[in-house]
Amino acid sequence: MPEKGTPRTRRRTWLVAALAVTLLAASSVTWFAVSRAEEREDRLDANRELVTHGCAGLLREEMYASVPDDARGVLDAYGTLLRPGQESRALLDCTLAWGDGGGRAEADVRARVRAEAVPDRTSPGSVTGDFGLPLPAGATGSVGTADRWDGGAVATAALLVDCPAGLHGRGRTTRDLLVSVDLPSDTEGADVHGIPKAERLAVARTAAKVTNWVSRKEGCGSEPLPTEPGAAAPAKTPELCAWLNPKGLGSTPGDWSYDGNDNTYNRRAGACGGRWDDTAGSPGHLTVRAAGAESWSGVLAAGAYEEYADKALVPDPAVPAPHDRPLTVERSGNDLQLALWARSECVAGPTYHRVSVTPEFDFDYGHEDGKVVLEPKDQRRLSRQVRTVLDRYLSAPDGWPKRSHCRGTKIVGEVAEWRGRD
Image 1 (cartoon, rainbow, N blue to C red):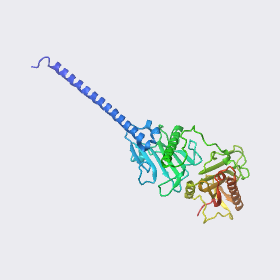
Image 2: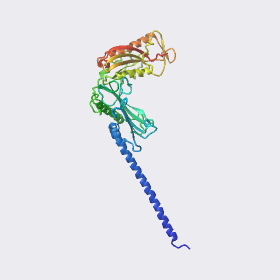
Image 3: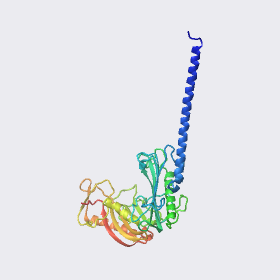
């Protein structure tokens, strides 16, 4: 027969055991949470150390406060300035990546800096535009955005800088230093159109700092670039494009806008552009409603010409443009240009010039719906107008060609975008 106190004793024993299990589980959860927190802190410290010392510390200022703590960073660094004696085309090529999404190029967070000597040519598209910081006449740059593989956005910057003392040890000496920087956006949901101004300024500032560091290490001979927007900017020179006056070009009368005009002189590239922008009236058939001029010099010249050649938009010496027979132009939805190419020798080296006019095509004017016929006299008149643009551009006292001391100019040929190629 069981004793009277046995059930109570068993109940106490069960309660003690349950309490012990609860305390053990709670302590396990607490230990796990503390352990996870310590791991995150360790990763954060390691990542900040990586940003501080990796890539010669060039990314520290912009990346230190925003490094992730959920993945350890990976450093991929090479280039002759980081590893002397290394066989590399790059002076500097360094990537910091966190969160491998299938390769470092697809990491969740990725920052990269690159600097290289340009031997003969580079595309002008990446280095001509709005840089956000004042640049001297020997440097040109641009800030933009790019898509990230996971749908986010990346702020990008590129700078092309003149090195008067030359960049040595790359097979042959060159004066052109190209720097590019990619920084991830910290803005939630940012896309290529939504990166804020502060992040664009940050990537421009980083590119300028990288350029100054490389220039100093290489003995480039160039003046340090400003790294803050408050620095003294080059004087604006609106007269660079004062020659682009629609009067005398057979242009549409009325108000014109000049969003394509450069305000500061750069000896590597220049651009002027205007278009009819009047709410009153409308352009007449074959009157010029837009005109412009661009020049690319030195390593940008060949790069620009190749870009147009890839689209079959450069003169074909084997097929000169005839003006002796009517041409049918079909409605395309695009603004069709007549361009005239020329080449010169200017202060920054071999140079290509491209001037253009955009005539108004009144497709209701034609005999067939959506088509107009350009008679030989119309073609010759448009050719005279685009040649007038070139002559004005080359002879303007304060225009880009005169400032760049261009000489020996030769006509390359015309390209009419409405003329098909067999």
